[in-house]
Length: 167
Image 1 (spheres, one colour):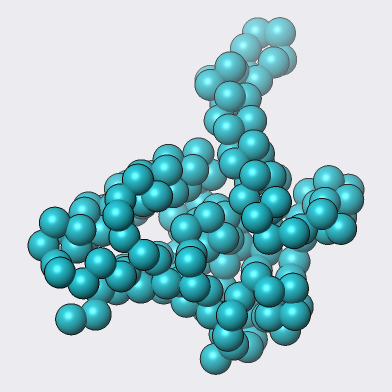
Image 2 (cartoon, rainbow, N blue to C red; image 1 turned 180 degrees about the vertical axis):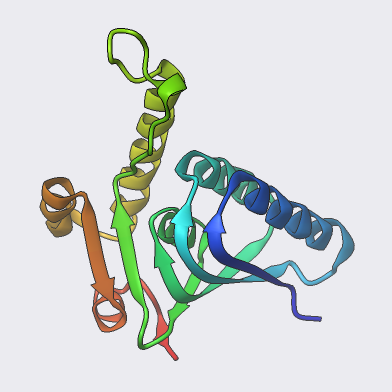
C-alpha cells in the first residue's frame, strides 16, 4: 500500500493537524513506514508548519516529498522533512523569512506587535535558517535577507542538490 499525504492549497493550522492525524494513522496502522508527501501549496501558517515538522520528525518514518509547487511554509516543510525530494520541472521552490497580516488586536496601544506574534516569527526564522544550512544555501542568504524571498526554479534545485529528481 502506498501511504500518501496531500498538502494542497493554503496550509492552515487545521489542515496541518488533519495531515498529522493521517500520518499518525499510517505510523500506527501500516507496516510500510515510508510516507509520500505531495505538496502543491503557496504556503500557510509558518508557526504551525514548524510544529508540524517537529512532530513528523519525531516519528520513525521516512518521508519522500514530491513538489508540484512549494512556497513559504510549504517550502519549509518540504526541505525540513524530505529524505528524498523530487520536483516538477515547471515548479518553483519559494522561500521567505515569514510575514504576517496583523489585525487590530495584535497591535498594542503603543503600536507594537504582540509578543506571541513576534515569538512565532522568530521560531519560524530560526527553524528556516537551520534547515537551509542542511542544503548549503549560504550563498543565497544575502538574497533572502535583502528581498525576504528566495525563488529557485526546479532546474536550479536539481543543480544545487536540493532535489534528487525532476519529473
